[in-house]
Length: 158
Image 1 (cartoon, rainbow, N blue to C red):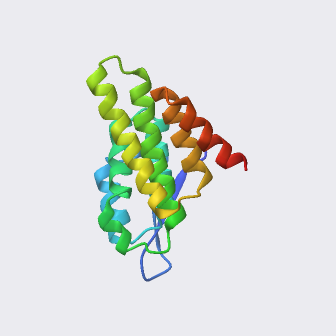
Image 2 (image 1 turned 135 degrees about the horizontal axis):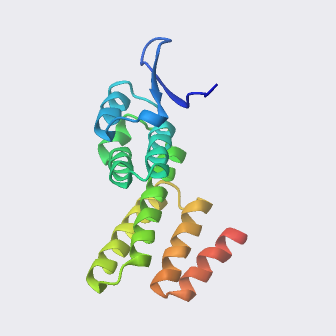
Image 3 (image 1 turned 90 degrees about the vertical axis):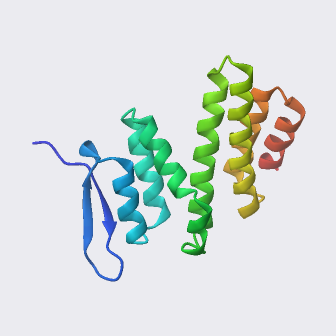
């Protein structure tokens, strides 16, 4: 007997849910439409992104993260700072990963800039969030900025 892996999206204003089979994920735009319409908690946005990533559907993973980090969403989720930071850190880490394997210098710098922008947005929400500091330190290591990377790691340890 196989079990179906499911993510439940709560329907705004009542007790019903939308069931999404993880093994048969539709296009991310369809999921985003439902998440937006139902004001679904931001942790679900990240959970869907991770599932797309696990399935190797990186383009869909990116669509989910871009949707979840859209600045226009902040007004609808004013008390979801931790979840917004997690989405921004995931996006920044994705760009750091892309930069680490990129050989083209211009493209590498573009990825680093996008990673930095994501981490900076996360820091604006909470300057002392350890995951952001660690993620930014890793980015700084890849960029060869050992002094500032060490400063970030030390801040976390203290």
